[in-house]
Image (cartoon, rainbow, N blue to C red; front, side, top):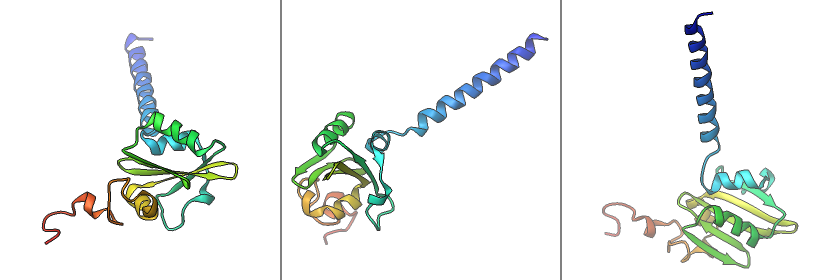
Length: 145
């Protein structure tokens, strides 16, 4: 066989390896949402109804242990620890870790939805003072007139 044939085969194999590597790198995702998805057990039956972006997970570990694991991997912008659970605020997501009879339930949801749902606990700790977060976000030109 000619050397050109082997060169074409080698180039095709290298291209295939590159595609596989890129898919595996970008399909794993980054951030607290993907960290929780990779490290805890999905529990769709515990999702909060009415929030399509909410994902629930479980762990046999206590909320304080789960919180340490998550915050070790991803530093939160804000954190509130209360008797009802641990509330972590990230740029795009809220991670709520609550005690469960056999460990913890972990809810991951968009930050705005998490704030609306847990406003009574995180108000004043996550940087917003209004239920919808308008004061924090600025609301755009002409607001407050």
